[in-house]
Image (cartoon, rainbow, N blue to C red; front, side, top):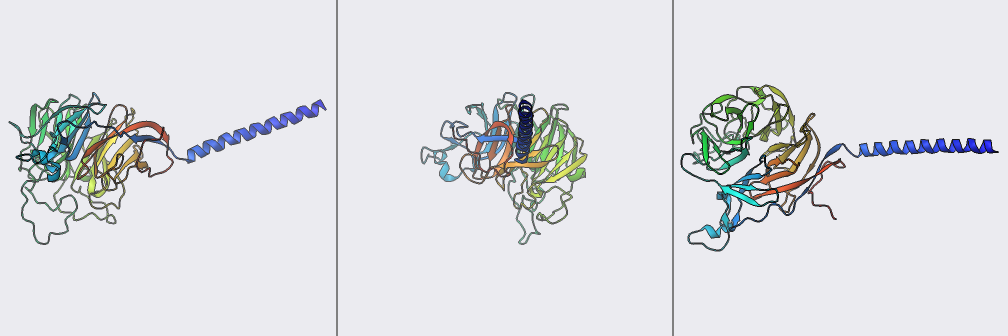
Length: 417
C-alpha cells in the first residue's frame, strides 16, 4: 500500500514537473512571439515650458543635444504667418505675437536658458537657416538652404523631382556654414553666399542640411544637401577642404534625375536634399538620401558599405529625413524621422531592420506635422522638431526596453496612472 502510494506520488510529481516545464517553455515562446525587444517612449506633454515675451516659433528646422544635456533648436522666424505676428508690426497691431530669436537653448526641464542669432557683423546669416549642431568643444554650427531670388522657370521644365532638383546653378544664396560660441560669438564661416559652382566645388556648399563633427579627427561632415548632391568634409578648426563624394562613394554630378520612381533601379546619384550625415561609434556614416527613400552607409573616407530603403513607395518629400542613435554604448538602435508618413521608425542598427514605429499626423502632443529633425540625450530621451506649420519641438521620454507587440504604435500618449 505504502509502496503503491509512493510510486503514485512520484508519478504525479513527475507529471507536474513536466507540465510546469512545458508551461514555462510555452510562456517563453509566447513572449518571444510577441516581438523582439525595442526602446519604448511616451510624449512629455509639458515640455518645453512656454516662451517669454509673446515669442513663438516658426519652422523648427534643427535640434541637437550638447554634453550638458541642454537642448538646442533653430527655427525660422520669417516663416510665421501675418496673423501670428501682430505684435511685430509697426505700429503693433496687437499684443501677440513676436518671432523668437533663431537659436534657443533649453535645459532638461524645458526652461529657456539662452537665445541669440540673426544677421551680424563679419558673417552672412542664412536666408533660411537649416540644422544646428553643438560639437564636443561646445561650438555651435549652423547651415542654411535659402534660395534667394529665383530665376525665371521655363514654361515646361523637364520632369523636376521633389526637393528642388530643377533649380539651376546659382539659385541658392545659402552657400555657407557658420560656427559660433554657445554665447553667439562668431568664429568662422566656410563658403560665401551665391558662390557655389556645384557638387564638385570645394570652397562652397549649396544648401547644407545638417552638420556632424567627428571628435576623433576634428572633421566637419556636411550633408550638402539642398542644391548639391554630396557629403563634404572640412577641417573643423581651419575650415580647410578634406574630401567629398556622392551616392555609392562616386564623384557626384548635378544631372537632373527627374522624379523619384520606386519601381525604377536605384538612383546612382543622391537626389535633393541629402538631408543628414551621422557618424556612429563604430565609424559608420549614415546618410539620408531623402527623396530616394534610402539611407546609404559609408566609411568616413567615403567608401560605400550598403544601403537600405525605408517606406520605399513614399513620394513627395521622401521618407528619410533625419536619424539619431540610441544612447547605449553600442548604439544598438536608429531612430529615423519620417516627415511624410509622420512617424519615427525604430531600426536595429546592425541589420537595419525596422522593429516598430510611433507617431501619426496631427497637431496634438505625440503626433506630427512634418517631423523634421531628431536628437537624443544621455538618458535616451528623444527630441523632435517639426517644420512647415508644425512649428514646435517635442520631447519623448525613454521608458526602457520592452517587447514589440505591433509595428505601428501610433501616438504615444502617456499611460494612465
